[in-house]
Every structure is written in structure tokens, then in C-alpha cells.
Length: 178
Image (cartoon, rainbow, N blue to C red; front, side):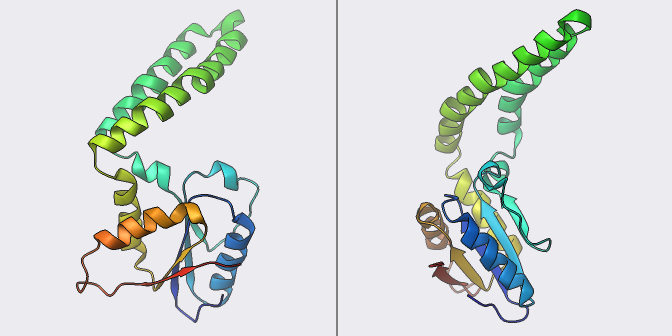
């Protein structure tokens, strides 16, 4: 895929199943003089990938969890216990407290946050994921949206379906075949 000079391309790669292709295509867009933004669900699966320096990578989960309610949940599940472990972990208790804090976050806080808080948050605040993706779409104002994997299709379809037609020209949508 090649993008002409000045073309703005938004890659939506929420499933992270086609990482190499997304990295190569986004680098090609930048090399052709365009701008590339890659929207990923989480950054962790992409840790071994190296994007071109001009490619902007946006983590949708982080955007989705902005706001007071999300901040409060993270403060209760992660912040307060972290502070408690820090207060207790002085002197000879430092290493055990550090290990206990890491274990608590991995085995208790993260699963509770992922399995309990996020589903409730998504149900109560209608489609925060779609809202975050719409916000990135508005900020990027792309000429082309590249749906990079099958996991991204429902979210892009929902966002494009909810847009008001006729107000702003809709970008073209493509599925990356690699």
C-alpha cells in the first residue's frame, strides 16, 4: 500500500495479529510523505516491534480509561495498595514488600480490574472504547482508515456507523491484505 504525499492514514490494529505488516505499512506511509497513526488495544503485544520514529502509536485501552470513575477505580485497586506497600517496605521488609506488591498487582488488582471493573464500566458508560476511537478519528482526520486485523472490524464498523454523514467527508476504509 502506498500513500501519496500528505496523506493521513489511521491504522486500527486492535487484535495485534498482523504486527509486522502494520509496522511495514505505517513506515511506508511516512516514507511516502504522509502521516501514520496506529491505534492498538494495548502496547504490550507490540513491545518487540519498532515503528518508524514519525509513526504515532495510540493505546486505545489507555484512552478508554480516562475520566474520574476510571481514575477512582485505579486509585483504589492500584494506588492505595501501592502506597501501603511502600509505607511498610522499609529496611529488611523492603524486598518482601516489593515482591508482595508486584504479586498483588499481577494476581489480584489487574484481574479484578480487567474482569470486573472494565465490563461494568463499558456497560454503564455506553461504548467508551468506541468513544475513544471516535476521538482519535476526529483528532487524526484521516484520509484513509486501514483495518489491519479482523478483531478491529467491529469497532471500526460501529464507529463509522455512528458518525453523522454529510457533516465531514468520511475517510476511505481499507482492509490490509499485507
